[in-house]
Image (cartoon, rainbow, N blue to C red; front, top):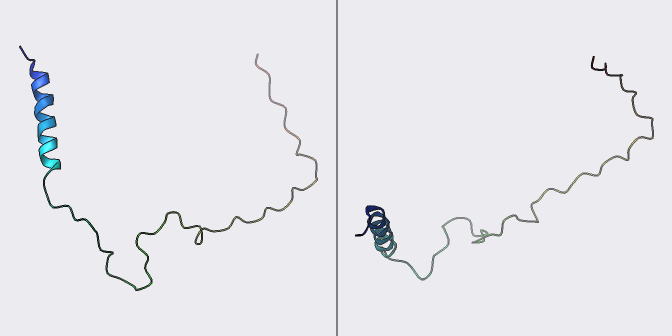
Length: 74
């Protein structure tokens, strides 16, 4: 006999395949209406719009701050 789990899986797969075949799929998609300068599709991330990293100041040549002694464990 076929178990009920196998029948449930088969029914779920059949429903998925049936739904995937529904609907009209266009061969070409028009770009959305908007400004004339819009490009569709655009690349992400756009390197022209990325902020440039700020230059870091060179590290100071001072001695590090002294650390406090930690109490020992008894």
